[in-house]
Image 1: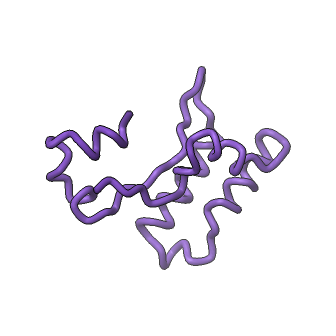
Image 2: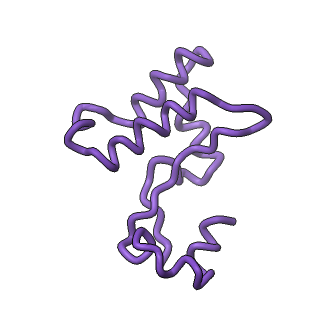
Length: 95
């Protein structure tokens, strides 16, 4: 998978994010069709990582559950994230 490629493929070793340990996981958003709730949840997480001051009041996991509740009627972040080894909204070690 992608994480294995980041760890073993020398082509990725030179990436600044890999060198500095700044690789993060987001939730996949294409599964049969576009899962817009995951797109929105991922956007909040990316905003928090890139612009922490502007997103200081946002808890991405809580925001994801708020979004999932609107779209599917219940909080679902933990359940979905568990399917991906809890790597969503987390720093992924690749060294």
